[in-house]
Structure formats: structure tokens, C-alpha cells
Amino acid sequence: MFIVRNKKIYIETYGCQMNFSDSEIVASIMTEEGYESTQEISDADVIFLNTCSIRDNAEQRVLRRLQALRSLKNKKPGLIVGLLGCMAERLKTDLLEKEKVLDLIAGPDAYRDLPKLMVRAEEGQKAFNTILSEEETYADITPVRYDSNGVSAFISIMRGCENYCAYCVVPSVRGKERSRDAASIVAEAKELFDRGYREITLLGQNVNSYSWENESDRMNFAGLLEYIAFINPLLRVRFATSHPKDLSDDLLQVIARHDNLCKSIHLPVQSGSDHILGLMNRKYTVAEYRERIEAIRRILPGCAISTDIICGFCDETDKDHKETLELMEWAGFDAAFMFRYSERPGTLAATTYKDNVPDAVKDQRLTEVIALQNRLSYQANKAMLNCVTEVLIEGDSKRSNQQFFGRNSQNKVVVFQKTNNNPGDYIHVLVDKFTSATLIGKAL
Image (cartoon, rainbow, N blue to C red; front, side, top):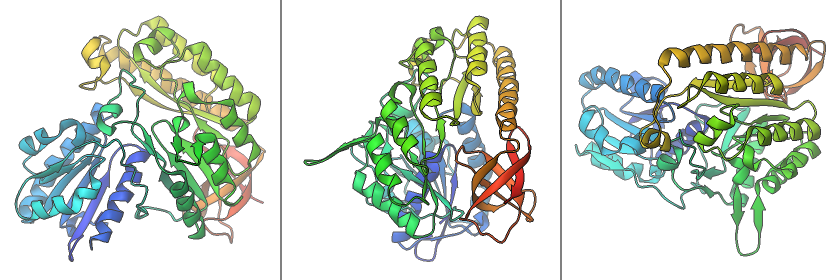
């Protein structure tokens, strides 16, 4: 959502938390150039769509959105439409030729170039920059928190990925893995706390592999996390996403030492079958994944664990699917993001394997996975019944302005009747009801 020289710009964000963080970086760059934001697309002179390519349905949503913007552009001559992010990087100039509504595209490492691209677009030229960088981290840019509740914020600590999972486009659209200067991350976290924010989420494709050094110092993720924990005990810290092969005991022990490091870990497994994990190039076995779960349970009792699961990957058999269900049951995940496999052009899977699991089978397996996870989430929340949990108030409940909602350390949503407190306050809540998605209670 944003404008330059009295022109308004609107940013729509698709996909993951990383994209929301990137939109805030874009907002900062454009604000420095004199742009202003609008939350009304009808008022916009410039529309940016910040896109995701991880799944086909995410790209299809953007393509449908571009079609819908045609009528708006016809009504408003001079309206500039730009495509940002992973989809821009993957499809590059093909989009400019096929989607006449587009005036510019910029890949995830080209946001500093947006003011120049805008000048060309305003002159009626098609403008683009999709060059990937081995160094760009936007470390010196303070993001504009344009879509924030004022309580929680994202901090991007690294960019890119070099794991090359067979199904994933991230290495090709986000480039080589590189980490931000540790001092810039700590400074951003301190600045957010001083402005009243009480929770930050550190973001990276694989935060566990964060590694930064200069001539006199070196920092891994465990060290960075501990450094941030010392900023203030009232600043909660979360992170996403962890790769199982890099989740160390040292990191878990750091989390155990600090109450403000949230006891919630997102650890994508993708499949419970060694056969499928090998095809996916995930670089761990089911036994190794189980050992990491056991380490979390041992070092961080009561820690919530969430995961990602892909149903119907290439060559997945009924036996492979059953093993995934068995692993889910054993792990007792608190929550999961669950998807049916969709082939992404240019990935190892697309060039090497056959997408040979019928759609109907993918849908059935996904249905079974969702049903099981709903039961597991219900059981996990049931265990909180009659317990007292500390909640960071984030704002009004979506269902009633007479209720607050917030989350506890385990990242569970908690709803309770309003008190005299304000968003950003911590409060203890006695849980007396629950669903598979929400804890409901009374403030103490």
C-alpha cells in the first residue's frame, strides 16, 4: 500500500512471513522517495503485488488478480502496476510480455532499484530488474511497519537458501544463502522494543544456518538468539523456519535458559517416509527427525511443535502415506501447515521425477492428514484445560470487540473477556474452554 510526489501506492502481499517482511522493506524504500501509503486500492496511483512461487495456487491467485486489475487500469489512465518478489524472479520478462497490465517487475534482490524502475514506468517504458545478489540483505534499511498491530513485528535475519529440496523454487528465486550483520539485527530489535513492540519473529528460509562474521567476531544462530534475549525480558522472541538437520542442542539449551525465548518450534518434516524424504532431498531420515523431536521434549518440556507436510509427492505410495500418519501420531504436533504437492517448474522434482500421484489420491491423503492434525491439535489444547498461561495481548478478538486475543509462549491463540489492560501488556489467563484452534479463558 503506497505514493511518490503525491502519488499513492498500494502493496498487496501474497505468501509467507518473509514476503510480509519484504513488503515492509519496499515500503521503507518508497517512503524515502516521497511516497505515501493508502489502504484503499481505488485511491492508488501505483499498485505493487508482492508474490510467492512456492505453490502453483499462489501464482494462480496472482494471475487472477492481474486480470482483475485490468478494469481498474482502464478506468484510471496512468495507473502503474508492478509485480515484486519470487514470482517476478521466476517468470521474469515473460510476464511483461504476456500480462499487458504490468508496467514493471522487480525480483527480491532488486528493491533498492524500485525508484529508478518507477521513473521508467512513468515514462511509458516497461521496466524490470530480476538480478539476484550474493550479498544483498537490506541490513541498513529500517522497515516501515505499515501493516502492524504495534505489538509484534518481523525481522529478516538472512536471505536465500542452499538446501535444494527437490520440490522447492526458493534457491532459484531467492538466491544464495547470506546472513545479515548481527549488530544490525540486534539494533533493529532494540529499536522495536523502544517503540513499544513486545514480540519479534526472526525470519529466514533456514534460521538454524545463520552465520555471520567479521574480522574480530563470529556469530551463529544460537549466539544471536541469546544476544537478543538479553535486550529486555519483556521482549518475546520467536523464529521461523528451522531445518531439522541444523537444529542443535546448543540452540535448544539457549531457549531453555531464557523465559522470553518462546517455547514454540516450527520444524517442517514434509513426510514420514525415508523413501520420500530421500526423493525430496531433505538430508535427514525419519529416525534423525524423531531424535530432534525427542531432544526438544527433553530440553524444552512443554514446548509446542508445529510442522509442514506435503501430500502426494512423486512416487508416494499408500505405505509412505501411512508412515506420515504414524509419525504425526507419534510426534503429536500442536499444529501443521498441510498441502498437496504441486509441481514447480525448474525444480529437481520437475526435471527428474514424474508427478505420478493422481489428484484424487492427493486430495484424499490431504483430507486424512488434516483430519488427524485437527484431532492432534484438539488433544494438545485439551492438555491446557484448567491451566494458567501467560498471554501477550495483541488486540481485539475477531469475533467480538468485547474480547481480547493474544498468544502464549507456545504460540497458541488465547481469547478472553476484555480487562483494563492494553495491547502489548502481558496477562495471566486461566483456560476453561478450548477448540482445536483456540484457548478460551478468564483473565486473572
